[in-house]
Length: 357
Image 1 (cartoon, rainbow, N blue to C red):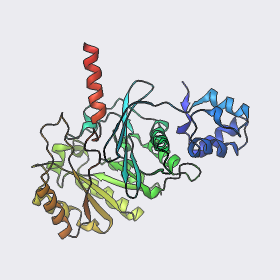
Image 2 (image 1 turned 45 degrees about the horizontal axis):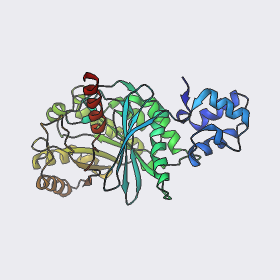
Image 3 (image 1 turned 45 degrees about the vertical axis):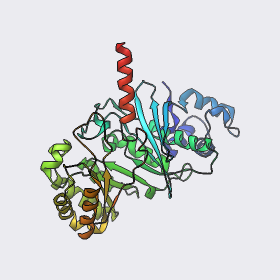
Image 4 (image 1 turned 90 degrees about the vertical axis):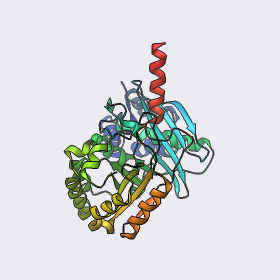
């Protein structure tokens, strides 16, 4: 099966072309057609010689993702459900902000982390996505923006979709290098955020990469007992070890880290929880930020509800009083299946019911 050309870094494409008898400068031409002009077939590359186009057609494909469905919210949020060549489904979300267009990408088919509140963990991991499949999510969204005939671009990326990015580390890093490359999409490293549920070994590795990409840690609880009850990863990788890895990251990079904290009504949203969280990260407060996230209810997780506004406000004010920088995430796409994994889960349920009929 042909591989996606979107999975090659610029250096890998250049090396491949030279190995196949082409000049090095062809890589820049191809890259320009792919990421700047955003072609759909190699035959559209007007300034590339025919023999080079034939080579590319024999070895690669440009598109592997099929748009299964698309939802558009009244606030402009777009959610894409893509079908992969093997029939699996993944999700990608475009969110529009005053500062630009941000895309949330998926890195795996399913997820093995098993957070009890998360729709994307309802189905265990089937496989990792290739770097090309991750890049192609960005390209599909950019082309959808192009179709609106607006002079806009994807300016920000959050790697927070289905799956644990650090469980697909090699392909994640290739993806980051491709979308950050100045010759192509040129999405600034500081405009890219990778979120992890806390794979400690990879946090150390990521700190040593010497890149400017932002890191977010999904914390969601201030102590081991509570965190283990809602995030099974904490059983083998407890908070104290996670904080040691965070300390290493901060010392090595001197970059701010974000702690993601989903507020679940009556579970982790009390004033006492806020005080405990502030105590946990007080020695990191100069280089940390807490992102408080109102829970987006999932049909299959009926045991959880969104925190009351008064609790969210109290939690926020408590952290601020303790000198912890924080904010409450603005909800996007509340009128569509915007929560991670929701649209995919619903479609797979429909497919199973159809198969039984």
